[in-house]
Length: 67
Image 1: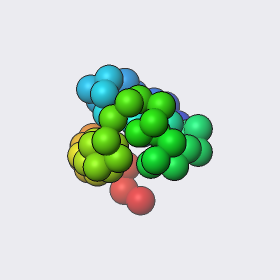
Image 2: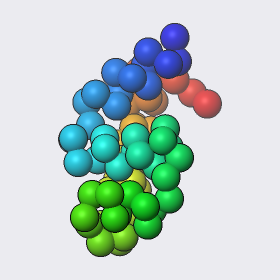
Image 3: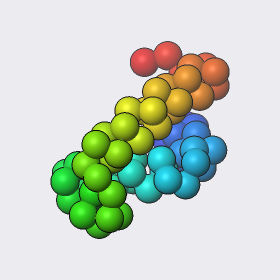
Image 4: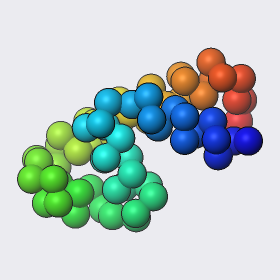
């Protein structure tokens, strides 16, 4: 059930944020690797990851998930 909630929440993210989260957490790439892959500054990757994780947490809490 949690997997479905997470998948639904990921799909609601902006594509720019979703790709960063996917590469960092599901594909196991480092911030530097993601920055090179997406041709972005490393700081942009970190910023997108921060805001995406914050939004994911909010969406999961709204869905009733409580650690």
